[in-house]
Length: 198
Image (tube, rainbow, N blue to C red):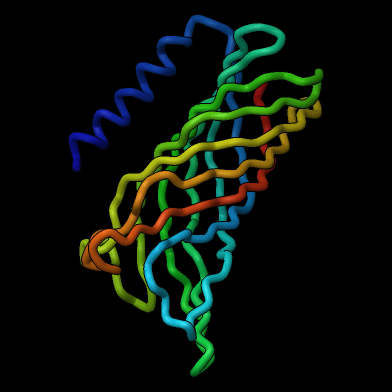
């Protein structure tokens, strides 16, 4: 596991260094994440899966190729998961899946202040639990995942407002959690605001 983390960090350093001599902007961002697990496992009828709200924040780098195209890379900490509501007895159990995300996005400027984008996101889960059970320690949840990111941004001077949807493509659960062949993927909607340094 450690070697993957080292490769991940080295890739980020090489990526940034490769553009260091060109014009780029750096910034910070924060906001809210609305996430929910999509699973094909048989969930008990008395359990309702709900959207979980969490914090999202981190840093970003934007490199502009020309007046229409740019690339944006981020490193964010995100609180994901979902909310499990049991009807009898009435209990709310948050499924916590917090971790770091590294999205790489290709942006197209549709106007001077607006752009649309798409790309991929690599995720590394650092904390996963439900009702006091550490799912990572029990080897029930996988650390690494990835997804497809689509969204749009509005820019006003140094402020950048972002609406994004992440479609989870990787299965986060081990076979011991649900059973052989069952999967669980995370979909997330982000609403963030950021500040770009000059």
